[in-house]
Length: 303
Image 1 (spheres, rainbow, N blue to C red):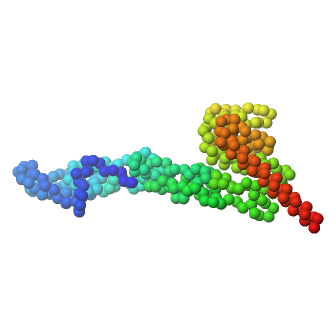
Image 2: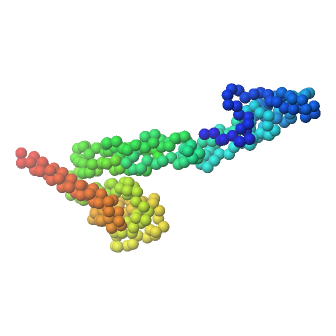
Image 3: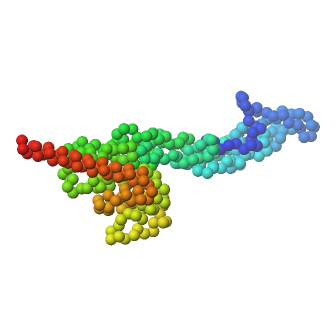
């Protein structure tokens, strides 16, 4: 986008064709009408013409310009880029500076200002990255793909395959979390909550819970020896999510199982019930798949 020309320049603009190279003036001594030369771009009229002298033009000083043939007595001051803009092309004697939105912003003509590129939420990937002139274009992740981040540049990622030898799907992937795979060889040492643990960070990002609720959840999370979580009231969204994710990574399965109930108790009923449903599906799959696997093994042994 270009920095707008000064209003004082408007009388020089020509709607159609080339701007005139001359202008009509009056000799200050004789009062006669004269046709005088205009000054070319990059110059201004230092002295008007007379019957005995042509127009005297002078170069624009640094920091000023004229873009058109003119007869103004002073060059225009170079423009200044606006908020969230950077210089695309420096000002010269013949042209004002050109500005564009700085990285991460685009020009919204409706508001005549640079706005931050839209972020694609979880469950959506970037179809087209934003530019200085256009906003980000997002798309819902197609079948078989997911996005667990809020981003202005990341696309959807393919769900991992749970069909490798020894692996089985314990939770199908969705638009906002990856598939969760399990192995019956480790089922004896892993609880359903251990598999739920894999999607919990994505879950809290996807739910877009307000800061106040995340603080309540963090306060209610069980800790080792019943210690209280400290300095929660001053934490903001990034720190709260980081603290919750750290708790998820370090807590035993029996505490992870309490999380859906804790979320419900803070008033986020729908979110808590969704998380509880995910855990129930994982438990059901574990029991079904591993029982089926054990039956197959037993049948092979008796053949």
